[in-house]
Length: 268
Ligand SMILES: [Mg+2]
Image (cartoon, rainbow, N blue to C red; front, side, top):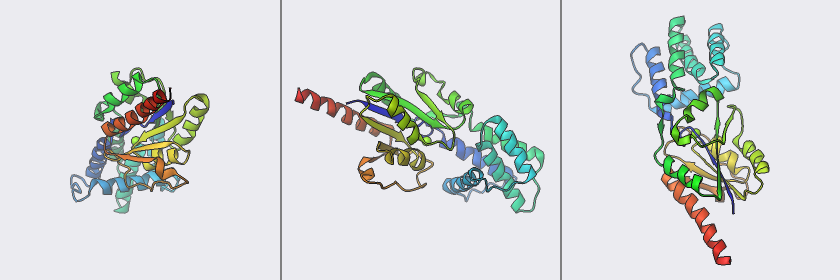
């Protein structure tokens, strides 16, 4: 039996949530001129962030000239996220009847760009052991599929750890990992089972389940825990597995792969 293992990148292999939190806190600090809204929980800030994200993606964000300017600059930099942070800033100022100054917008934008600095990331515990197992086990073929801009996502993988990971696929933000795996399944037609490993219900788990793959959901790292419900189509729940960390995921993969092997040798 051959396995195709699809790994998500952000908050699955590398920890990025804290960088987002930090940037959000810094933008909030900029907005409130030092009066940090400490009463806000990270979850509230992420809620706000996701609201803005969906408004920007659906095109319902306010189209003021200032905003367009920030969007345009963000587009040139190749990312939506700095624009969202700057937009958060601008929206808050406008709601108070204040017009943002160019220099403040620039600051918000720079804070946003920090999100993409690979120096701010750490490797999630358990990544080394998992990647090592996948590498040496010849019944597993693994791929990293992530979303975002190639220029910004690629530097995150320029670590020795990922050096021989050639199968990096970067999809646009509105892409679908499930569709990508379908394409891969055609190319690697000797693979019997596809397993998706990721932290996001919307971006990893549901695309996997709706296309008949096994989904390993890591909940501890996630900034997306509360986002969306697990899709229920046919036997999808029987293919859904939840884990606290990558160590547990590795144990699961090992049991699945090695159990098969034991069965094969028993048949022989
Ligand atoms: Mg992720």
